[in-house]
Length: 637
Image 1 (tube, rainbow, N blue to C red):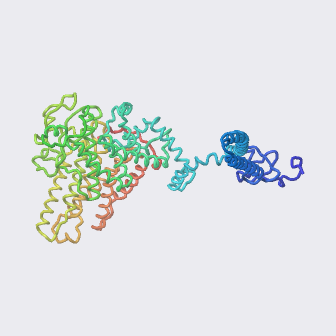
Image 2: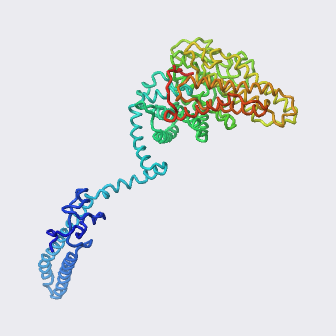
Image 3: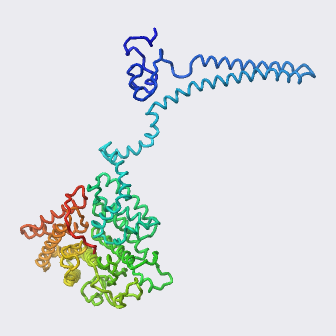
């Protein structure tokens, strides 16, 4: 029966050869089944299914050819052996026999080679067609290479295909941000991060990146993306949270590896941004190793000492700086601010963990940072040297603050810092009026660190009258220093910069931090006496006075943070240190209410709301309620 003219149902037809090879269900349609029509492959229906492999006739043909070859070879050998006994004509006869038998032998071998070649040609097109029209085999190698990556992505997220699609979009978006949206990235960083980590020269930064032929600024840009990517808007829309998470994770690995390649200021800047970001994210265990590395590296690079102090030092094995001379005054101030930001990180870690500071104040021979406006406008000036708490009051700057000292004992040899003229007297003593908000914050956080180290951490035997007397004496000394610091603040900084002439009404982030940190120092210094435990009940202590100081400091912190949050855009982040100060103040209000059975102050709820607002701001644009306010931005402290 001829199937080509058969009108029987299609179900009686066998599956086509293409579907059998691909192991698909054949629809048995004419002239082509649905699978072959979809794949564009030829559809062939065979009358009977052939077994895979070589056909039986081909094997028999090969066996016959091999038998002929064996007979020819063995027959010529026997003939050669028989003729060897014929005497002197043996060699001639053998030559004739060899020449006569070589012709049929070559013909047989040639025939065998031809049969094998034909057989190979019959098999090869089948394999070729199978690979050509089978898409699964065609992309199998590609899927095999990507299988491990896809499994990793699916393991990291429960969204499956959606997460994979977002990751692919993220990789495309990454290139667009770096190449086409650099201005938006820099704007997000200088608006949101630079005000409280002021260590990058803003003026001409874009041109500095364009001229970077050695790719030294690449690590800084990557760190900026880690810190600021959640505040970048593309086409008036915040970036996807999944992309931000994957991109910052990738960039963090790149920055951490690149920062270990050499001693460069750009590497320090990148690590500082990562450390502050990890602290703000709550990943403290990831931040402390970075801080520890920075505190040692800054010593190796000689950034804890002014260049003029290096010039004065003459020793057989003097520790020289590994950095070249700064190009100008702006770069010198940038290096100074890099050191002070590492100093701040070191003090934060010592306060939170109770560790000894990695940077000893007595080893610091650095001038305090200049006002941010002067730095931005390239107006050089010389500020006083940083002083430490171990110095006598007479050696401190007019006895007003323990954290800066002026005079010939703190100065250095005169050398020109830039092309601008600076008076020699100012270079020796320093101009206190040129100190910026960052300088006062450095003093404030160092005060808090010293209180933690010298008053809160040492164990005291309160049954020993001598130890108690020394403890109270230390308390009075520290309290007096805090009072002096607040008393001698310039008027423009007592209210965090609201009353200053330049940009009035705008609270400076660093000065707001300085005042909030000062209040935290007052609370931690007085709280043991304000709310004494059973060990101190037998001592005559000014508990009521200390309790009032703690209460006032906590209320002032609530007012400061409320004004600062209300005067800045609702999506602009606040430094993580401010959250610590707000938490300590809220806890103090709660303890005060419970200890003295007093009504809970209304500022407690204000501080709780402020902490929630700080958390939302830190999350970025996508999580926060983004309502931009038209406020004038600070140039930085």
